[in-house]
Structures are given as structure tokens and as C-alpha cells.
Image 1 (cartoon, rainbow, N blue to C red):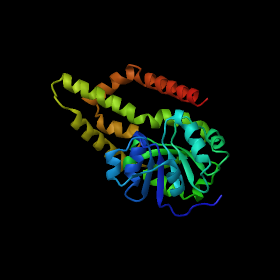
Image 2 (image 1 turned 120 degrees about the horizontal axis):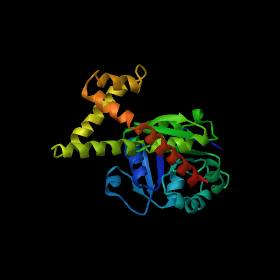
Image 3 (image 1 turned 135 degrees about the vertical axis):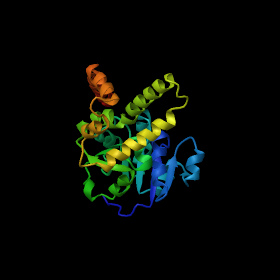
Image 4 (image 1 turned 60 degrees about the vertical axis):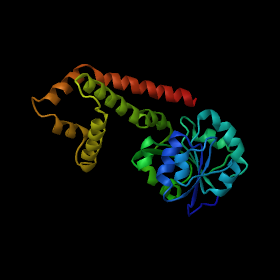
Length: 260
């Protein structure tokens, strides 16, 4: 297998929600080809060229699979006859590396990865697993643009997906709850304030990265005998942590069942 050293053109098979977020980040530095039944105006404004699948595979050094699991077998059949030295990165949830390898007629230059929607800003944790030497691969130069890469064993993907991949939904769920409570107390449109609060909280955590744990920063905000401490005590005594733990463990079980 010949390793491609220079990445000029990246292809996306599937340019839906996840694909669009990756394209938004990569388009300023790379040529982007996309294969998707729907041509999105925003993607066209980013300079994306919509092409047929043959042109995409033949014209790309890296090919992202950002499609639904039920489309994998059909797409794999189409591209397996065209692959030569391209790197294939699968963002397909639940699709095991060995399964994809078999669908691609034992093609070797493939990577299983799982990001979050934070890839559009380059602030996503990204789990990676491959039989290729990842540290020597030019694929990493692209994935590092999308976020913080973490090499994991494949059996950890279900937990990663359920904790980090779903993480934006969990945080948005809490934010939505805060918005509902704020409206109950007369704040008409609290959503922009909550977004500012999330940005500020993220800045605090990033500025203290490596020196403080989440618990330390929580204590910084919750002064002794204050209103924040009262709320946190109520949350802890309610067993909410156990509910979250059970919910995420259920998500891990669901992820495992989808991959079987």
C-alpha cells in the first residue's frame, strides 16, 4: 500500500449533518468533493464540488464515509472496485473496522473514527482506531484540524460514542432545562445568555486545563453557604448522578447492540 504524503483533495461520501460540520472546518485548506443526493447551498458557498462517486474516489486522497449505517453496504460495493491508495475514514456509528474491511474486499488503508459536532470549530474529541500505523500516517494532519485525537482500542468505541459523541446533546439538554426555568421566572429569551454562559465556562476550563479538575472549578463558583452550593447539594442528594450513570450505561448497551 502506497502512502499518500500530500493531501490536496478530500472527498465526503454523504454530506449530511456530520459531513457538513467536517467540511466547514476543512474547506478553507483543502479542495472538497462531495457525493450526496442533495446539493446544499451553504456547502456550495464553501467551494464544495458535488460529483458522482467515481469522480470522488478517483480524485481524492482521503475519503470520509459520513453516511447512515444502512447505506454502508451499497456504498462499499461501489467504491471497493475503485480504491487504490486512498485513505478511507469511517465516521459511521457502530461500524466495526473489520466489518468495513471485509465490505471493501480487504482494503487495508482504512480508519475508524468517531467525532462530535464540535469538528466544525476544531474542538471535538475524536476517537481513532486503525490497523495502519496512525502516527506515521498523513491522515492525522487532517484529523488534527478537526479536534483532539485519541487513539483507543476498538472495544472502547461504544463508551466513547455514548459519553463524548452524545455529549453535546447532554449539555444541550441541561441548557434547555435552564432556559425553561429562566422563562418560568420571567426571562423572555434566555437562550443567548445561556450560550454566553457556556462560552464563558468553556473559557474557564480551557484556561485552567492541566492545573485544575472539574471539581476544583465547580468549587470556585460554589462559595460556602451560597446559592450555588444550595442548588448543588440538592442535585447531589436527589441521586441525579446515578440517573446519569444509568442512562449513559444504557446508551453504551444500545451502541453495542447496534454494532452486533
